[in-house]
Image 1 (cartoon, helix red, strand yellow):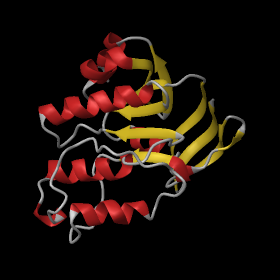
Image 2 (cartoon, helix red, strand yellow):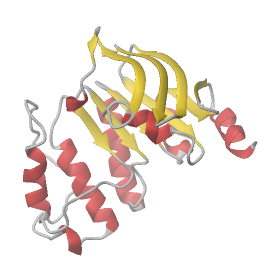
Image 3 (tube, one colour):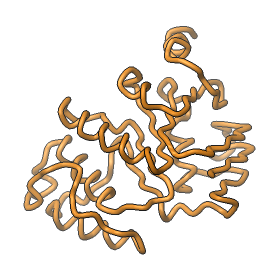
Image 4 (tube, helix red, strand yellow):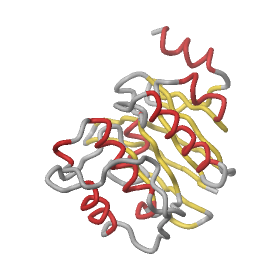
Amino acid sequence: MLDLSIEKIYYGRKTILKNINLNFKNTGLYGFFGKNGSGKTTFLKTFIKTVSFDGKIKLNGKDFSEKNVAWIPTEPFLYEYLTIKEFYDFYAFTVKDLPVQSDFVFDIDSSKLLKECSTGTKKKAYINAVLQYTNYNLYIFDEPFNGLDIESNYILLKKIIDLSKENIVFISSHIIEIIEPYLEEKYFVENSELLRIDDHVDIKNRFINE
């Protein structure tokens, strides 16, 4: 069980989100939506502790550790003078005590230099690096489909769905229709609050209406 009791998330003196009290009791895929700049990514970054917040995050009654979070950002940072294989090995130094799986999500040429790769291939390399390990406490995908072609989107979607069968998985995305059928719960970030939403019609109305 993942428990959140957060008074506020902030940058300096500016409060981005407030009064977040949530309990994620079941494994599954949880969706987070909102307009650009509403605070979706800021909320997700609390789990890797790269933003300031007042409150507590607990996993099964113990303080949550960011060390075992699978974090897939919208625009991942890579060392472009490494080959893809070298980046896989480099990433391995940042992860400890997690088992390795034999198959990567994407089949790409690991001998290529990252600086010579397209935006989509770089993102695939990053996803492969992170998801070569298993048994993370939490999986977070922040706009994971950006920069990928349609075929790759469906490959990644299948992987995310598979992960959500046995893990808690968070995802933010503007592609509501594709992921909604697989969501355990849906949330919308609006006016510094995180609101539980019941259906996609409500989500669309919130995007359209000011």
